[in-house]
Amino acid sequence: MAAARAYLPGGRIGAGLEALTALRARIMARFMDAGAEPVEPETLISADLLLDLYGEDIRARAYILHDPVEGELALRPDFTVPVARLHMEGGAAPARYAYEGLVWRRQAPGSARPAEYLQAGIELIGGADPAAEEAEAFTLIEGALMGVETRAMTGDLSIAFAAIAALRTTEPRRAALRRHLWRPARFQALLDRFAAPPPPSPSRARLLAMAEPARRAEIAAAGGFVGARGEAEILGRLAVLAAEEAAPPLAAEEKAMIEAVLKVRGPSSEALSRLRALARPEMAPALDRMERRLDALAARGVEAGALPFDAAFGRNLEYYDGFVFEFRAARPGLPPLGGGGRYDALTALLSTGPGEPAVGGIVRPEALLAASA
Image (cartoon, rainbow, N blue to C red; front, top):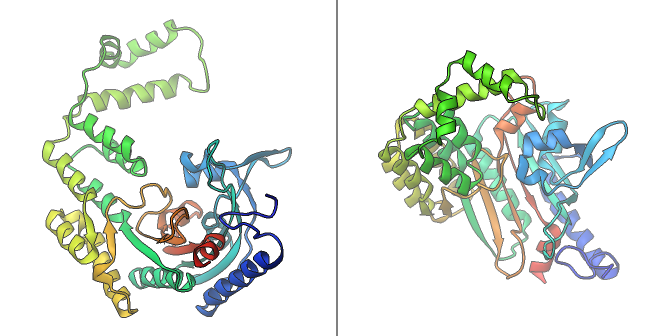
């Protein structure tokens, strides 16, 4: 139906459109009442930027088009990156930005999920009190849901990163685990392989045992190069693989530690106690911030200790690197009505300096209106 839109039959015309327009205005008014400046970021963003900042998983779901001047461009899959880019290119910190409009994501054939839908959100960038700002972002998004029944979920990816940093293993292995934290199956496969490395094939063992001159001769004997990799890159990769092959296996207790951390779930106060019991010294700052955030949420009237927490939650949201939250619809068949989190590393990637602390969240107006019907 031409009049249908995401989760909202008749939302493009008449009374349905009027109700949606009014809701969008109320959400924006709430964010602006919190001191946010309205912004209107670009609709088309560089596909290369998309890959660098969102990762392969989101890029695979983006609508890509070719511009004869600009090259590959993508319809924005969300607002966080375009808004953060606006700020890093000319905003003054601290800053608060409110926005609303369309985003686009390709879906698998036969999927009932919409390819085009609305987001309204707020970003808090450059603040001085991260725990307080995380609590504020959570309550701003919760308030923008207009009292519709939801179930909250929270997590904190900085705790998982701290657990990886605490592993007594090589830095290349820690880097690989950090890179794949958002892909749970791949992450677990890496942990398993690091703890029990499979024996190399005879040809691989022979190649990795060679000195560099012998490797150069082997490359030359193979014939011309196929693809973009040259000799230097191939030799560099072989050196990395040889060092990995020579590294001792990840100790069983190290593997058990990080698996135990990622399995922690339950009410936030209980989860914090369990994580403290598992923690290495490297994890203390992340856990201290979680405790401060729970105090800040309680000061805002949230039953913080009872908030559901899952240490593995947020592993499908690649640019988040700290506190994450989501408000799940009570009505079946709807997506999360709102959510957000911290993304400090993203601002660093968008700047020539160290970046700025940043946290924010979004509401899905069409789904919210459908849930309130």
